[in-house]
Length: 124
Image (cartoon, helix red, strand yellow):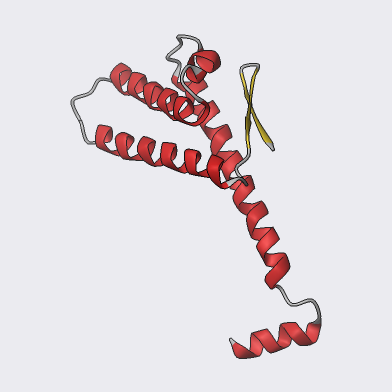
């Protein structure tokens, strides 16, 4: 079980669990899609972009951990730096889980001795 911590708030998430990873991937996909659409609007002022970025991150955390989570993490703040730092922490957790999963799989697929490794390389 992993732990996400930001601004003194700790939330449990296990990105090695398919259910938690599904929540994470869906929320991230929605965030990316909406951010891409928003980036096409060249008439937005800087504060509007910052506010939108914060709202996207709020929705991201609420969809993973439940409604009201973003309020716990950020209160009513629309500070883009705080939001992006929290989002980066989640991306880092995701990357750690991906690497851990790869290591687990590699442990089952990597030949154990030199002769086995040579045979695999020869086939390639």
